[in-house]
Image (cartoon, rainbow, N blue to C red):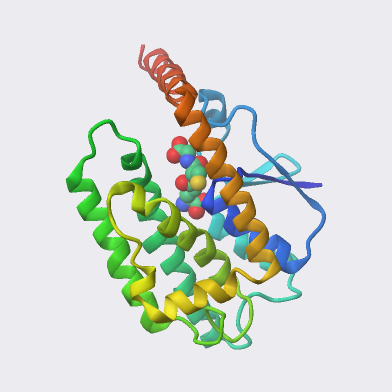
Length: 240
Ligand SMILES: N[C@@H](CCC(=O)N[C@@H](CS)C(=O)NCC(=O)O)C(=O)O
């Protein structure tokens, strides 16, 4: 049986989970790897990130690669287009969710808890998020779906991206730009009513609450410091 190494708050994992829910796939189990964040995890997976699809020990990283692989091995129902051009558009909008929203938000998120916020980082990455929400406003479907009038891989990438914009961006001192973009705002309120989206959003919210509690008690900083120390020790050993 295949396993998806995943975590509630991981937006990239959420993107793949939403695809799995939308396709009705029931033979992939979700697991948070016990060694995530440790040198052992990086030994097995040099990129060191989740999600990872474990196919009987054959490890496949990168959410977009996993999503495309799942489309190939579970072609129905298709979350791609009916024509090559439609598929290309779906992939373009999915990239907005991944590279232009999630990636900037992921790099920005430590600024929400920094003892002293780096305004240069917030301006650079937050500025990109605001600019790309405006771009998305011109490209997004007007019928409650990102593309093609039905659920596609573009929705799977946008839902976790917009979750971060709404729930994490304000913690950096910037306003959520979605209400200023009427087409994105209408899409965002419609898509959340769809079961696969509602399900990953509930998981993302649960993950965010857990993370906030760990931050509040100081446990998160202790975990991060321990992970950093273990990684540095490993690097020194490798360099010795
Ligand atoms: N490009 C990767 C990004 C994955 C990613 O950044 N995952 C985060 C969790 S959402 C992670 O594992 N971070 C651990 C780290 O940065 O060390 C993908 O699409 O899968």
